[in-house]
Image 1 (cartoon, rainbow, N blue to C red):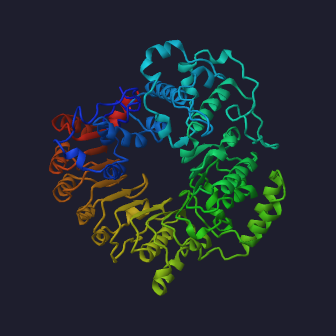
Image 2: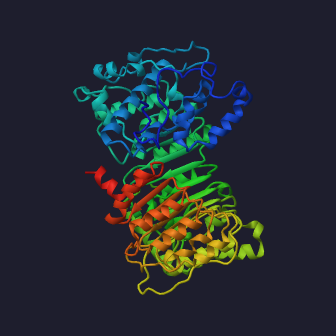
Image 3: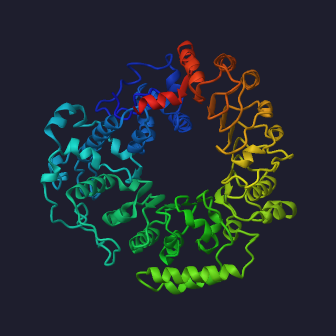
Length: 638
């Protein structure tokens, strides 16, 4: 069985086997002559379009050597993440597959070791013992049962482009290295795989962690794999505390495009991260995407070095701070190089951007930048300056300066506090539309329904010609429920995905759907305390092109609703009904509605025992339809 394939046929992946499939001449997949007429560059383009269709890629993988070679990079670009995404197998089975995959990739290091110098002979077939001399031998029992993975004929590791080191490999060690804890940590140079490296540990670290044999083995394995083909690595994602162990590899990552750092806390020294970025920028300047995350600690954003990290990226295309709740508040204090080229700016949707920090904050940051180790006292003083400054500023800020600078911005995710946050966009559209960004993906939220309604109104009006994906979230229910009609009467010709949550969904005028001719995905979410809604669900059919419909929360779904949806939404492929009111919905009505939608491939249901009992019988009658029910999840976790 494939190591990356799950038990669920919906998520199979490439088999890390040690033999190649039959050649096209032995088992021609097409009628004679057809396969040879299609140029390989055309096949490559087709596979790129299927990059997210894992079952299809897995099937094509076994067709021929050519298909195998083209599909391999897609399936092994981030193989451990692919295993993590498998929901069908148990955690124990997933760990066993992780162990087998790791063993295969470690053997790729041995079999396909790259020559360090072009003038030196290629050391292919280097001794496994020599390469992994600093860690214990793999269990002989494990090796005996996995002989096919011992000498791979394909360099799977060279396809590994996106290294997410946040997924701990140490849970596989009891399987691969059962006697690991009986070994001591070798007294080695911090960078044993790179003896010529001049990188040295930073002299100041906020954390001093004792190296254990488990930590040492994990670092040794991941360093060696990274150095196998470092020039091909595109993504490096790891906790910032572990970056020190990989500094020596930075000068070799000539194609690194995305850097993700997690676990950034107040008491950790950020200098190594800044040095890494500055050195990489000096050598290559290829990093375009940056993500930083950490605990919801307001002090972290008040650290001047965090602002220096963002400033160290020369040509940013993606800045992702969605895992930093407080980052939105400091939106206008960030200084980015070449901000006009930024394409994606992502903040946490659970936290709104109020009045942006101003010159007082920037001055405090600049003054504190000369301090090598910021203290909590300094953070408090900066916070005080900010609060004093905000008290004399107009809190109904009408502009978001950084966003206006990003001329190529196509994706924005942001929490807002003021209803006039995007009034500038309306003015630009009315008087100088060519100067407005071509936003395609827009996700906005606010704790106040009136605010998110006005902001979304402005954005839907101003960016009407480019929007393709819109999400609006009202984070809280209004203290006194009152009608706040929300909708639009102008065409959104490109909009294909619409998601509304909270009061936006409650008061959404479904008549607006007729102005969205390309809408294919609609998600409406009511909160548990939202008033139940029913009387206008029949207008869902105003979007006849829907392929995905999700109704979550206190929507009142009836037999008539299901019949109407079944008759009119004849392109629907996925239906999600979760937590809806079903007092007037019968099992027969549900089944009748589903019967009318022959295009359906998946249904997600959480509607109570009665409806789910009827669907269990229906599942036997319609095996090609995947029906996922809450009762199935409960059984799986028992």
